[in-house]
Image 1 (tube, one colour):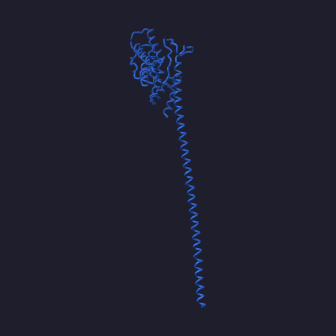
Image 2 (cartoon, helix red, strand yellow; image 1 turned 90 degrees about the vertical axis):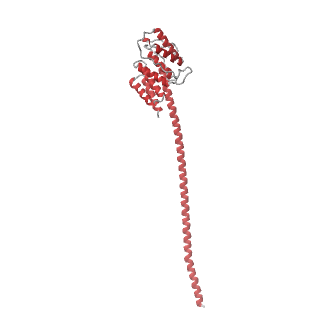
Image 3 (cartoon, helix red, strand yellow; image 1 turned 180 degrees about the vertical axis):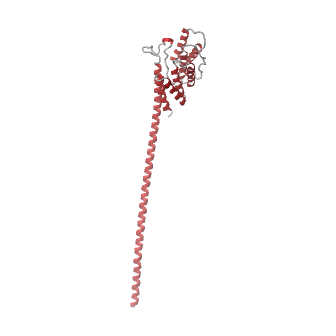
Length: 286
């Protein structure tokens, strides 16, 4: 009987020992599992925060890019406006200076008939570079006259010569460009030896320039320079060659011609105007 009780007590003690050895291991395993879960949750939370920060950074960069694009468009618009303003200013200066060409202090108003100056030269009035084509514009396809260099033609009647020139120049001042072009062509053909022939060529080219017929205007000014390279109108004609090339977007030729004006006629109005158009050309080519 005693032996049986002893075995029971031993078995119970063995079971208790086994139980005590198992339970702490399970508890430790549960504690480790819980720590790992917490660590994983913290990692996930950290990844989520990093993702939110990354999204915020992307949004901030996109906002900066949009802002820069808006500033770029605004600057481009301002640059276009400055280029147009510069071009308008140079054209206006060309027109105003040109209207004063040959006008001494106390000269007659622009609307009055021009009076002959010393040597029979007329104080021509420049029309400038207005690009709008009036109703009475010169024919766009009319070629400049192919007048031959001065020949040994009999001397013309000075009164008739002056009257023909005044008629052509009067039509030009009144804006009757088609009539003026025909009259100057007729004058050049009828009076090739006239001292006013270079002026007639110049104003013929101007009648085409003012109506934006730049190819024919360019050809006319080139003819003047070829036939009368030493005339009083040579510097103005060379300047207008550069102007025509500029309007035709012949950038390299225009730059070369305008630089010739500056180098060949330093200190003149033509040189100053050429420098201004060179600045406009550099803006245009940007």
